[in-house]
Each structure stands twice: as structure tokens, then as C-alpha cells.
Image 1 (tube, rainbow, N blue to C red):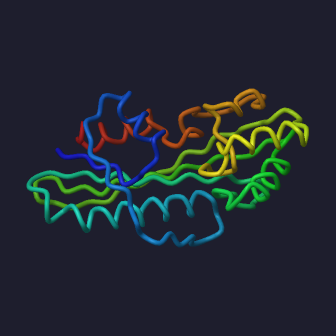
Image 2 (cartoon, one colour; image 1 turned 180 degrees about the horizontal axis):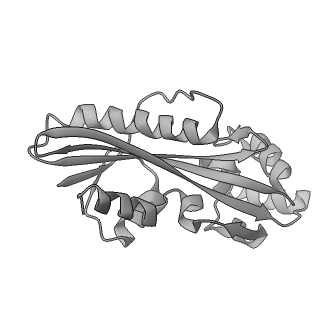
Length: 194
């Protein structure tokens, strides 16, 4: 089985590597279109778009079995979807909104599979509750100055310097990092792909 991760995320690569999966990386260049208003539906749709883009390219150049893994993560607070901030000002707005509150992190995963000549699609999502401590404007400015929030949904990375502001989580920590790796592993096993 050839596995391909349809993402440029170093965090997703690290989680798959830690799980012992051998895979190639082919980031999707597809234009992402958010469809629907439910965060779970949105992340599953975005993950499907990424996986489909790479599957279409890889299926003809791959002999035999193939699994493309697409994933997308968003932060949601009271129904508002927070993706990656466009700049420091937007990062400040997002983090100010989330400070001293609980929000949800959704990751959608799509598996496009060709096994024994048969093609199938399988998708799922995970949701984790994350609560932040109160955070001062100066602390937010200092964090934004590091550049860390600019490539992350919700403008923060739980595994980096922002970890000092996380009061607690309920659910899968790795989902907040960007990939619910344990759930993915179980899904691969159930599908007979591991």
C-alpha cells in the first residue's frame, strides 16, 4: 500500500511518522471552498477536496494499492469559523476572542483508497474542546511577534510557545495539533489498510 499525505503541514507529517506509517507528501494545491455552516461538515469537505486533488494526480502514477490522506483543521467559537489569520491584526482579533473562553477545534480526515482495484472514500472528523486562561494584550502581541500564529487555524499552536495559555482540553490533544492520529489509525485498521 502506498500512503500519501495531501498536506504540507509539518505537524501532520510528524504525527504520521510517530505512528510508524511510511508515506509520501504531496501537498494539495486545490482551491479550498468552505461549504456548509457546520464546522464538522466544513472540515470533512475541505479534507475531501485536498484528498481528491492528490488522488486524481497520484492514481495514474501509482501501480497497485493507494491511500491518500486529506485533512483540514478549523477552530470554532460560538458558530464562527476561525481559519488561519491573514496577518498579525487578524491573529490579535482571533486570540482576543478566544482568551479566557472555551472553543472547539475540528479536524476532518478523508481517506481515498484504491485497494485490489476497488476505489472507496471514507471520512470522519474529531472535535476537541480547548479552554484558554485570561491573556493580556501584551502577551498576545509578544506571541504574534514570533510569527507562530500565522500558519495555524485559530492563530495558535497548542504544541508551541502558546501552550502556556492553555488552561485545559477535553478530547484528543493530537486533534488540536492537526491530526487525530489514534482515530486515524483505528479507521485504517477497520478498513483493512493496516
